[in-house]
Length: 344
Image (tube, rainbow, N blue to C red; front, side):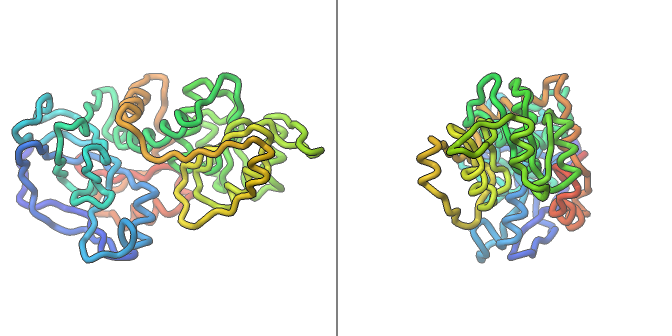
């Protein structure tokens, strides 16, 4: 192993749009803890929200470390963590064992080293040698997408529409295609993201700024009458935007018996026409996070030699260039996931 320095770089959030790359002491793992050397960490949409708000729920008097989509190598292991050894390639379930890594907890992944507490409680998973560290940083967002698809329970032959082709929406497209869903329409204003959706398995990709996405859905999926008006036969919708207009539009524009999974984070209330929900036998389901078995499923997907993760990765930045990386993550024209290289 490399010699551990006395200090390390860490990205801490102090207030709205006030993140700082700082120097802090490298921690020593106690019993039940593991010290990781972080290799790559992705910038999540929730990181953008935290920075905009100034914290998990808003500004506080404590600095908040950022970063939770990471791959790493085990540096050192405290007592009482069986099965984990120095040199192991791993990914971290940041929410497992109440660690809240990069989500309000005391540690974050945009750092040279990461102390993982409660490490014997299943939060560390081996990263196969066939999966690169860059791909390993996609495990967490792919787990979010996997959970959304599992919640939806797609059946063979069903047609799907994914509104929002950011990292989570693109992951949903990829997982749906991997599950055998062959008729997927992605809706996103970015031409770059629409192209990535097609590479990942969408059969069509349209812009919401077109005359209307509903005409495209009727064209690609067919139409059925509802109270005398044609509605698409799309059975399954995903909101990966977090937009009230998207949810309200899906409730209004979908056909009878459609299902909607909301995976985008909403920051304001949504007004729903419950009479329409009732008359259409419409089903709405939320999807947040993932259990540990879906985290493992994301690792398995990336291990599949037939799965190409390249379209999910847009650009790489060094940790010293974190402000530029964050600016790129805010720009949808960069496409999908912005990755911060730390130990590679």
